[in-house]
Structures are given as C-alpha cells and as structure tokens.
Image (cartoon, rainbow, N blue to C red; front, side, top):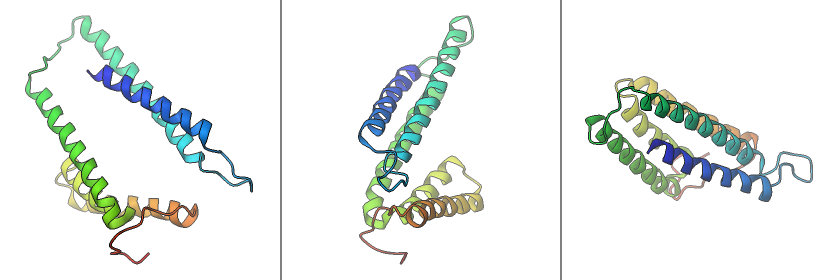
Length: 160
C-alpha cells in the first residue's frame, strides 16, 4: 500500500513540476524572480524526496520478502496508521476552512498549534514557539521580502 501511495504522490509531483516548468516563468521581464521560481523548487523537492521514500519502501519490501517479519493489515499498528491519516485529513480540511476566515498567518498559527499538540504532545512551550515563529518567518519572506501577499482574512485579527 505504501508503494502505491508513493507512486501516486510521485505522479502528482511530476505533473505539478511539469506545470511549473511549462506554464510559469522563471524570471520576469525586469529580471526579477518570476512566479515559477518557488513552484519549480518545491516541485523538484517533492519529486526528489518522493523518489527517495519510494526507493526506501522498495528496499524494505525486498527485505521483507527475503524473510523479515511482516505485520498483517489487521494489526493494531495498521489501525493507528488509519487513525493518523484521518486526523491529518481532518486537520487539512480545518486549515482550508480557517484560511479564508482568519487569513494566512492566523490560520497557520492555529493549524500548527493543533497539529503540534497532537504530534509533539507534552512539549507545550516548544509547540507555541514553533507555531508562531514559522508562520512569522513565512509571512516576512513572502509578504515583506518577496512582496507576495498572504491569503487575506475575512476577519482581520492582526492589523498587518
């Protein structure tokens, strides 16, 4: 199942990267980085890391076929994976709902606080610091340095 998932992700990543290279310009007419710069970097990164994960999964499958212990689909570990996948999808849907309401910065802070409290439970101070510092860095990079605005908010909680 993992190999099929990774092949699907790889197909989507290749398509995304193809679109980034064919439809979006790398540079603008004035010589500045264009709208295709970040999509190309992200697309290539996704392809490389997905290939890496795919080769790792294929290696693990080969080792399992050679006699290593393999767990069945009905064990407790497998059930936990489905719960984790459902949680991740729920968080993504929640983020998609929060984004137009609170805007990019606040929605990302809320999303990261919830996600980190699940993933990194017990480390509350670190979770709060990460949930504020990372979106602030993204905001500064895109909105202030690259002059690419973050998604607007229906309700402006933060005035910047």
